[in-house]
Length: 129
Image (tube, rainbow, N blue to C red; front, side):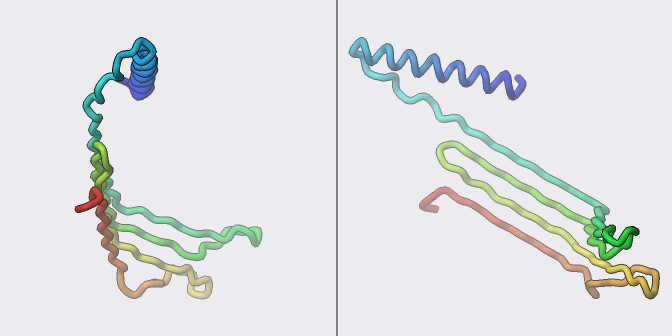
């Protein structure tokens, strides 16, 4: 199914269920019991190698490099589950290098003397855990 087709189908079913429930209540019957709650599992993994962002000063009428950030490795993983409550976790690992452009030396110089290694872990658990 396409996302729009599934969404349209879900909305049509919701409207039909709501109108049927209202019709049942007007005839004195009890509303239908709650059906099974939908459950969603989402997993995303991103692996990125050799990304560079260069900041350039182009306000002076000519392009002059200022500095650049380099990410030789990035790994990000996200896992989420949703039933009646949302829970999930995030893991991010990356290495960051930075250099500035020395106009006097006409070459790139290290801004960070050592690579910056970043590890982030976050988790959301259901209430009460």
